[in-house]
Image (cartoon, rainbow, N blue to C red; front, side, top):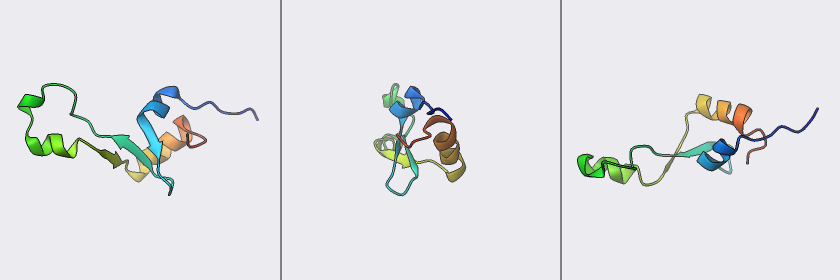
Length: 67
């Protein structure tokens, strides 16, 4: 069976943790920041771990080798 290609869009948006979970960026931090509460902007600074079902889909379809 040939090698599978990873989606380059997923490579830019997701990273794998050491335990195999999928990390992603938090939304709501790009524009209209003056209208958003400070708590929302503070929590949007870092990354978050996807839910298990969503992470499995990303790993299976978009990052088959865990790039």
